[in-house]
Amino acid sequence: MVFAVLVVVAGFGQTGDVAVGASTLLSSTPASSIINSGNPYAPSMGGGTYLSFSGDYTPWHDFGFGGEVSWRASQNLYLGYQPYRPIFYSANAVWAPKLGKHFGIDLLAGIGAESLRFYTNYYQCNYVSCVNYVSSNHFMGVFGGGLKAYVHGGLFIRPEVRLYAIRNNEEFNSGTPVRAGVSIGYTFGGGQ
Image (cartoon, rainbow, N blue to C red; front, side, top):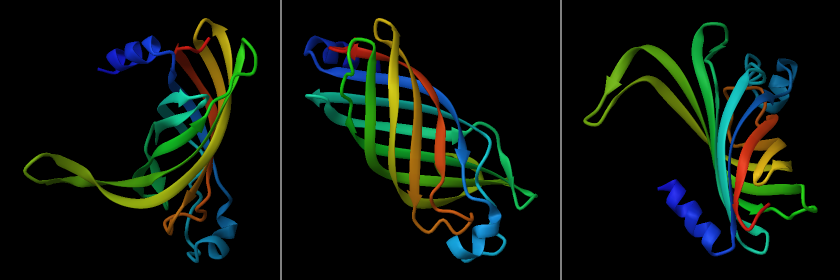
């Protein structure tokens, strides 16, 4: 299905990108917990390896829309005992101008959510599925950018950064973590 959409995109001269990436999350230290969240025991959510998948479509002269999901590759321990994993997902407005033949930039702003999954030793089931976690979800805004370096045709490497502005992130000491890393992707259509 995704491949069919990208073939259609290429046929109309617009561009689209798909990419996978790895990054880490940077956040303030727990010493600032009382100031930022009011919780003196709130830990930092920084560190760890995050994997991501993203895509965008730019039909209007370098302007378009996209989406992204990023999750911690392994579980972490909340306050030293509770396994958890953050997941970030967003829908974004994208501006992706070319900077010559071999470079391009991606700037984005969007909205989405942070889903904190706290894992348990038991399963909760409904009529559709069973899960072994409880979610704490928070609305967020996201701002970011990246520099695409085309290495062969439409294949690119993109160093990137995302700033998350998370509403009511009381579980952690900061509501504004930064994710920094690199993605490898491909531009379809009128790109490189």
